[in-house]
Amino acid sequence: MSEHLEELRKRLYKKDESFDARLERPNLAPHLEKPPTQWKEGDLPPVMTAPIKKNRRWIWISLLAVLLAAAGFYFFLFYNSISARRIEIDVTAPESAAGGEKVSWEVLVSNHNKKALESVDFIFEYPQGSEVLDEGVRGLRTKKTLGRIEPGETIRLSFNAFVFGFEGEEKEALTILEYRAQGSNAILSIDGNSKITISRAPVGVSLELPQEARTGQETQIKINYVSNSAGPLKDLILELETPPGFLLQSAEPEQEANGSWALGTLEPGEDGVVLVKGILSGSELEEKSFKATVGLRSSLGEFSVYGQGASTVNLRRPFLEVDAKIAGSDSYSARPGEAFEVEVTYKNNLSVPVQNVVLEGVLSGKLFNEKEIRVTEGTYLSSDKKIVFNSASAQKLSQINPGEGGSFRIELAFIQNIPVKTSADKELKPSIHFDIKAGVPPQGYSGTDLSGEDTIEVKIISRLQLVRKAIHFSSAIQNSGPMPPKVGQETTFTVTWALTNSTNDLRGAVLKATLPAYMSWKSRTLPANSPITFDASSGEIVWNVGDIKAGVGYISPAREISFQVGFVPSSSQVGDSPELVSEVRAEGRDIFTDTLLQVSAPPVTLKLEDDPRVDEGHIRVVN
Image 1 (tube, rainbow, N blue to C red):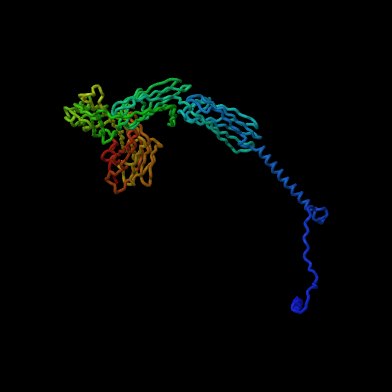
Image 2: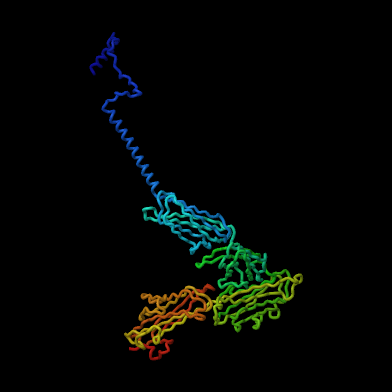
């Protein structure tokens, strides 16, 4: 290659050299031809054509077979399996109903599957507060056994009840279908519900109140009720919700012990009235609201409202105002025998002076200890149980100028022993009613009621008493061992605890004591299986008494328990009367006054003061 280049270079520089004569024309690469638009038979080699066509045909056949198999499998599953979507529960019921109206639920259960449903149960739960009309149904839940439902079969069910509730309340009925698929042991279920709105209350309730009431003056509340139900309403009760500062004076008919009224049975259209009188206290123009509710209370304490009504009254200050307080409060709880002081304030709210004012207080009940009554600037009239303040005993009452006032103090006490003779001697609340009035009406107020009133109640706290004793001889639980106790030998004793409770129910009463280390718990109690426990590590004995009714130990037997303990003296105790059981403490909450009561009794010793057969020769340890 280099030789040719060198020769060419020499010729370039050689004189008169010519390049007309060329070498051969170079051959360039030929143009590519366009491919044919169609393949002609024979264009491809014969060895390649047949396998490709055959492979494609098999691919399409295989894909089609897979699709057909999948479709067949889906068809088999869909048409031969049990699906909840092909089980229809259709509940037909009204969207609304008047309270106390009969309501019917028509239920259709349809099986649209290709297989039967087996072991079918239908559960229907009536709305809360309903009165079921279907025979054989107890409570609000019923279960009907349907057994087997064939493909395409429809079962018809019917449920009936009186539905109760307050106006606008939504009541709900629940449905549950339980079943087994054919050939399966699994229990499946479908839930549903049906809602009904109460369009009218079964009992109409309304309250009549004055638009305004004077603080301290008696106010009357009239409660009207009427049955709107198509059927009788049984065991109805009426409850009245009163505002703070309302003190009940009387009611017609009288309230039950729980503060409600038992209306009994109301026939369709039957009506009635409850009259309540009481005294309101509060500030000027304060709004006081009352609400009355009629309904049914279940055994579980749940209240179903059948009707309710509410009303309000505005308070106005009286022209002559009186206010009584104990320890600065309008309410007070006192123990039997307790002394306390009542402060009585008064004020003239008129724009003119008032003269010769008289202020009186009347004691109610027999629980005040009249020997302990002390009145300053006033007089107590025992024949009328009345405390009187007037211008003769208190010069400041001869004239009270506009906006002015003053106060008096009264010392009172309750008797020590509150009598409990019947079940009516319960939740006692003696009161003092005060009244203030002008002896001479001011000019321009003739014929106007200028008087003011106030009443203060004192709740009596129940008396919880605890008695303890220990006996060796003649015990309900047989004892053993020497008396007096001897060193190294065991002597057993029976300890008894007893509780009494006077005027109010107690909740959660419990007694606790401990055994000294030298004493042992013998696991014998009377009554047997009593709720008493012993902790060996701490020596603590706990008796969980629970609730104690008022009058226990007075009009019914005391709550009592006995248990046995053992004593093995040591030589260091010779000549002593050691403690057998420590001081016992009892407590329980007074439900009426919401007061925690606590009492205790001294330790039980070997002196056994309550065993009549024990004498001086038995009460000291001997060798």
